[in-house]
Length: 343
Image (cartoon, rainbow, N blue to C red):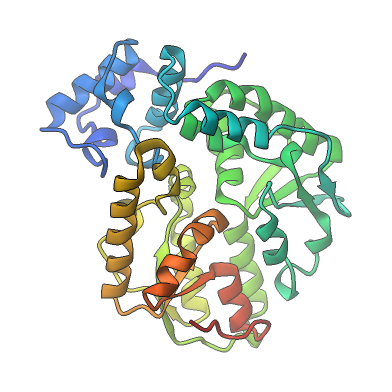
């Protein structure tokens, strides 16, 4: 079984304890208390963090030393049997994502377009932008990143399934896997690395691909001249170095993203996982504060990166007058492939 690569000394000598002090769902009096709590977790002792963490992934981004505090929290929770959600919900996710040999594989050659286990991604990965790889899609549990199980403190499921997913791509003989889901790219780069799993292909983040294609299609772009509020997904916390790509893409297609309280490092989750692990009251509060913040910017659209976030919030933002749209569809609008969204 794979083991998390974690250096206790890195945390023991940490001068900031930002992984906990910056948390938006737990409050600490200062560095001393936060540092004491993370050291309890490291030493296998009980900590209020193990009871209160809502699994937002943010501490992975806040830790600038690359020591994977969230994976450690999830490991300790599983070791102690402190699961985050009711057993039926945890088991539902395990069973729902079980490999059953019913995956779909397109005309895959050197490159594969990973649609994870999310049907909506198949529709997004089409048109002029994806014309050379649209038929090279992979879909199904056999090619799904199992990172979702971190939310339910089931790291054992990840350690069991991720090597199989990686091997399934290896069997296809691909050199590159273009990941349409943040969580897939984060899994192949952050989680696999944290557990010492070798990835025999190059994971490509779809926004890197999207930016390059939009540069190639620059002659077809008609600036949209609209304002958006960006719903950054929790899985993007695993790959914070990719955050600047959003602004680069939006600048290219003439879209403004004004500053707001809950963005970048300070972003809030879509709230649906929080609903499962921390209850309705916190989830509703997070969603209300988030949407109110979007509206205060004067944004016309709520732009999504993750289809799961889009499913969770589309109806809610629509009722408040914002038009929900994925960043890929914005790019398709800019080159005339998609009509402007209506409220």
